[in-house]
Image (cartoon, rainbow, N blue to C red):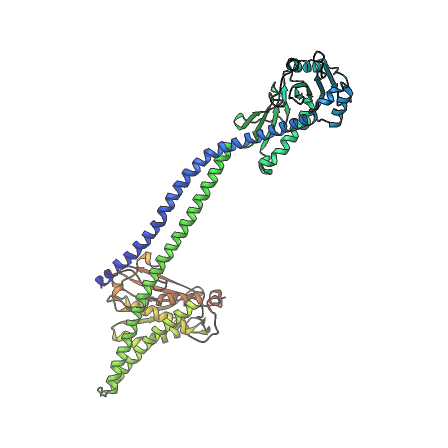
Amino acid sequence: MIPGMLAGFPRRLGKRRALWIGFLAVLLPLAVLLVLQYKWLARLEKTSAIAEKAWLSNYLEAVSNEVEYFYRKEAERGLNLSESLLAYQNPHKIAHHFQKKRIEGAKYLFVYYQPPGDHEREMTAYFDPSGSHVAPPEDAATLRAIFVALAPWRTLLKKEHRLAAHSLSVDERDPDNRIILNPISDDSCTAVGVAGMVVDNAYFAREVLPGAIAHALPKFFDDRARRNLAVTVHDARGRLVLGAEEPIERSKEVARSITFIFSDWKLVLGTRYTTPEQWAKSNFMLNISLSVLLAVALLGGIVMALRTASREMYLSQMKSEFVSNVSHELRTPLASIRVFGEFLRLGRVQQPEKTREYGEFIETESRRLTQLINNILDFAKIESGAKTYRFERVDLAEVISDALRSLEVSLRHKGFQLAFEAPAVPLSEAEVDPDAVAQAVANLVDNAVKYSNGAKEIKVHLGREGDEAVISVEDHGIGISPDEQDKIFERFHRVSTGLVHDVKGSGLGLSIVSHVVKAHAGRVRVESEPGRGSTFFIHLPLRAVDRPGAAALTAAPADGV
């Protein structure tokens, strides 16, 4: 039988090899994908830090653009005077123009011009928007700043300079009096004057800057990101103009100067908790962790699928062996019944003793056939959840005796000696299904016969341990290795020794024993040593107990076994 066992080995090895090839076919691309993703995420981490800094810098640029837009809009709207307004040579007319325009953010407004046709004469009109006064500023520093800013324009007007394009200019030589200038020209684009506004620094710090910062924030950051940001503004001397002074590391700051006006002021954007590098690092770790977890989950799914496929292949192989063994088990008793029946039918047996002997053979083989069919039917019911039990109070000794009596003829003809030891003091009646318990005992005896390996003695013992009745079946056969003892009660499982391939069987007997015992709220165990035999123990409760396991295993009305 060893050659027969080896004959199926290449086929099983080929199936396992196919599973491993399939596993590697998935694992290798997955490993390559993880490596590539790691490199991509590492590169993304570097570029993300740069992009985050650029994003912060873009926000500061947006704030600067907001400031520039505000002052350009106000200057172009309020300082755009026509030449005809200068022809009146009336400061009140010019003041009325400024008053009507309502220029925001201006501390003082003025116009310098030369009357048409009189280039030797110079006129300067002043307007104080806070009090609507038409008079030069009382502050000498403001008046001096205006005079310094107009100096280049005096020369240009005397030379009748032609303007290539109208554009605003800024004079910031006096940080406390920053001036925006807008040239005035005639129809020939010759400069005839210049209008200007002295910027109100306090209004800029109080209204313009906070408005620009608040207006640009939602365009770049969500609420969560805003809580991590700290925006401050510092003047040319480094003094804090806007924002709360916070102990923020230099590595967490991005700075930018304001353009157009207040160009010596600096916008500083700091991150309270994380730097762009730290943010990129955390994103990298999050993404790589998710990728690894996803790969592990996918790999776990593949392993589970391969294990399931391997187990299904193993079950398929065991089922094939089961069909083969059951076929052999069915043919043997049927052949014996047919042969002895033909002898009796043809009248070849004349002696009454022979007739009785053949009749015993026929009865024995019929019982064997019945037991096999019952095992198969019970297994089918167990698998479908329809197995039921009929419990009644009986004497276990009588149940075991009746079960063994049906096996005596077959065992005697095979040369086996079957001994039953009942307790000296009768046990109290137990609530069991007698047919199921008899079937379990018969299966254990049948198992002992199959694996006897020439040892012809089998001992069945009934005893008591506490509140339990203990049925033991002892043989002196091949025994079971320790690593196999937890598996022998699984369906289709057969011990992996050389002898097992010489023994035909369904592989269901011990599985049914385990199911029967669990349904009775009991337990089954085995003590065995290879080469020295095995002893199976069935523990059944003698007192009334709840059987939740039995209830879970019954799904149809009790109809006997």
